[in-house]
Image 1: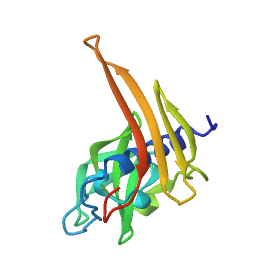
Image 2: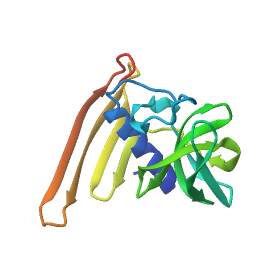
Image 3: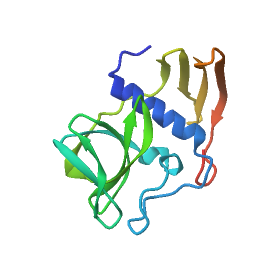
Image 4: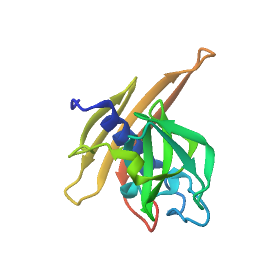
Amino acid sequence: MPALPRAVLTLALLGSAALLSSARAQNTPDPLRGCPDWLTLNPGDLRAARVSASRAVFTDASGQPGRAYVVKGDLLLQGPAVNGRRCSYFVRGGVPTGVGGYLNTMQVQNVPASPALSGTWKSGTGTLILAKTAAGAWRVKGDALYPTPGGSANLGEVDGTLTRRGGAW
């Protein structure tokens, strides 16, 4: 497994999750409506960022501050820039939560992306193998096993080639 910082691994896993689960129509942030569900965004438009301000309050589409905020060092998943702000989704435990809104791009710093996502990625008992084919498509294979509090287990597997069809993967 490549030795990469946890934030880069988180971004790779989040990007992979977005690739696998964005079968819904692709959306872009609309400053008149607010932030869309991050799973509907084009995975190529997503980026990881860390809050650089001591405290950054999420705003709505019109710029009005809300009650939710993030603090310096918090990890975010962000969508494309819209008028100097990005839809930002707070990340907890490697997964974006439902908490978020717009943040000024000056309040965050990009987390450098991995130069190559190809490789074997591990998180807990899960393994995800990403490989770019000669044709430029992504081949993905993986599995995960997670115990439940009741003593049973959830098992998931994926194996196939990712192709872009319209606005979905």
